[in-house]
Length: 185
Image 1 (spheres, rainbow, N blue to C red):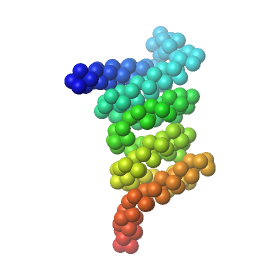
Image 2: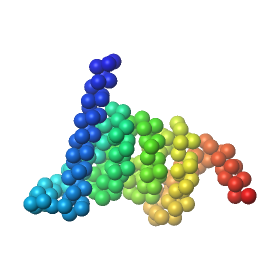
Image 3: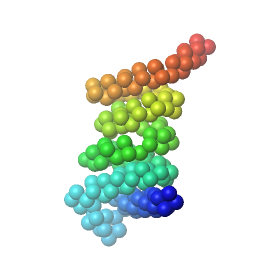
């Protein structure tokens, strides 16, 4: 087991280093920091999507091996997917390989994306968190719910939001009573 743990530590470190290196160049490209036309050459054609995909896969792989640094990079991963939607499919199966408690650190960012196309990919993760750890997400979801409900026209996203709200209401009934009591003050 010590060998397996050492292997996982090395893998998570290496995936984080790869994600960091690629993200550094992607940020330079996004900020138009082009030295000697290098960024233009590096990111020509479909390379920008390929590099963004490497970042996404590396961050999720590092999280799979228990990396806290990968967890901290997850917010950036959401930004990258929003900027480069062609790579959205990269997260579909990989999210299921990561224990849902590892996403507690970034629940506010995740709930903020539930009204966007990536929300469809995040739904299963949110559903899993609601089922296993409803108290962990109830506050961030309730804060975002009103805005999310009115900011999307996609009927599937609206339906998913309503299902999450109903499940949270079922799993955390005292929270609603508490909110109502506060509103009466």
